Length: 228
Image 1 (cartoon, helix red, strand yellow):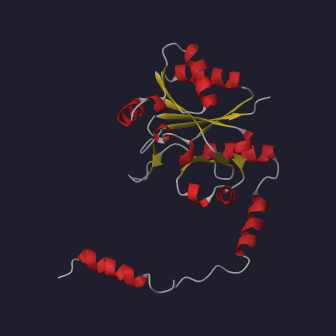
Image 2 (cartoon, one colour):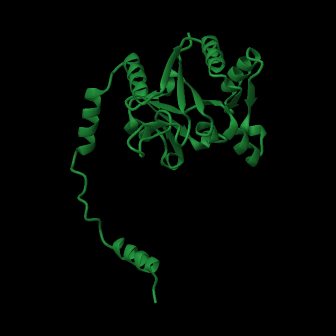
């Protein structure tokens, strides 16, 4: 006697033998989408950057424009002290590590945590208890203020969602206009293992009250670094 599970699996197997009942995409639809996006997308760098900043604030993210690494470090130190953060997890990127080490020198009570120096169990436990993380990303998508992280380019994704606050450094060359451009740039094999971050973690499932930090960081701070 077959179980309910077997019946469901058999039904699925039979269903996939038949062609989809959904119609094919209308001819020229991709061109129409591209034209529509172009009409609402800023055509210059400053416009795209400002669009990203505006959209990020709408989803409770924080945008900080800095003109040098020195200015970034100064702002980072002030923010860490104002929030009483005592630990900072740091991604493996060389420039990110240098910024973190300079920050810790000027904030002696701050502990820097480097995931690559820990085994798997230590990494999970230490990052879960970290107050904040300083990370890099691969792309910043302007029209939806989304940050894209390719798993192949990071040793641990824990940094991006276990600490309460995520500090992200974005450079102008990482900015792209929209998600269509993102998936055009990223090879299909890498796109399967990609993390997309749009603002702090949130939920409004209970009584439609917005709660930040439900399944991840309560704060997302984007440092937009335009080094002169």
